[in-house]
Amino acid sequence: QLVLQTVSQGSLDASEDLQKEFATIEKKKEELADYFCEDRKNVSLEDVFSTMKTFRELFLKALQ
Image 1 (cartoon, rainbow, N blue to C red):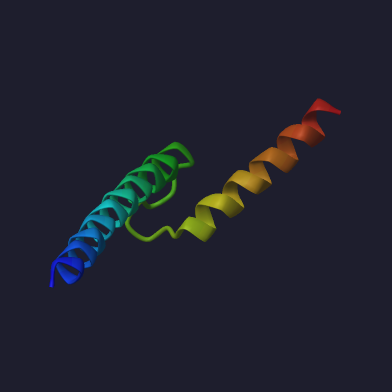
Image 2: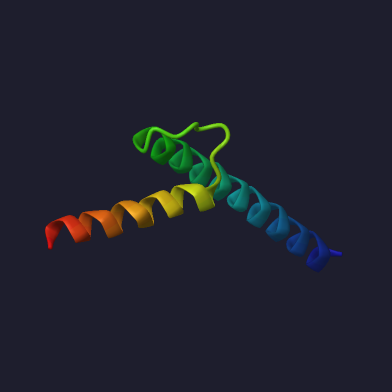
């Protein structure tokens, strides 16, 4: 029973840590959406990364 309690507590701790990480990612996504003038509530991570990729490509092209 002690082993089961230890495993359960470990699972709960990992779940809480994961929820914190997701909250951090969501906050950063919203900050990036604001920076790129996107709608922070409707933008996906894919949209943010796509915008960043396009910006990088255009920036590098402008440098040339």
